Length: 234
View (tube, rainbow, N blue to C red):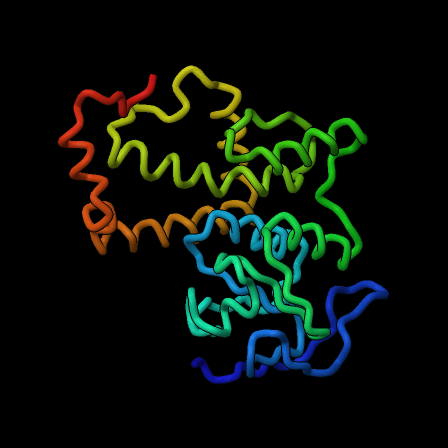
């Protein structure tokens, strides 16, 4: 079982709301936090949307980011106590609350630090929320002049697309026939906070490649053995 992790307390965000200056034991046995602590890994596209909010809102000094190994790793008693679904990211709070689900965490952080990252109208905010909810269906992002949590939900998964599909599935152009989506992807690279997250996720994927993850999972073999399937689009 992992040793307790003790963290120095700082106020949370430059608003009237701050985290209480005390350490409590969260439901994960023997793990204490003095300020919000994100359990996450660089390669996580879901955790990446939370990291984007943290960077964009200047919360790095107010929220710690630690590896799942701080809780003993996936499947450990501590990790399952924090999230019985055995998934990351998880946000541990000083009051003992354990928050799973990336969109829940992102919205909590925005509420706590005074908001922001919202589209300018209720209709566009609804579309941003829909994009976050349905991001696994890879809908085309809507266009508005500010970065929103809809963007935060989508772009980390596109790092997976742009890294994996050309290298392992033979795609020539992930954005072929999708100029608006390609333009949006270019905008994500121009945003310094989004670019930082893109680099983090890419670094994690590069480590996977270096460890021959695709062969170990049998993906490379399936691509070679099943030419009857269509692996390349369009």
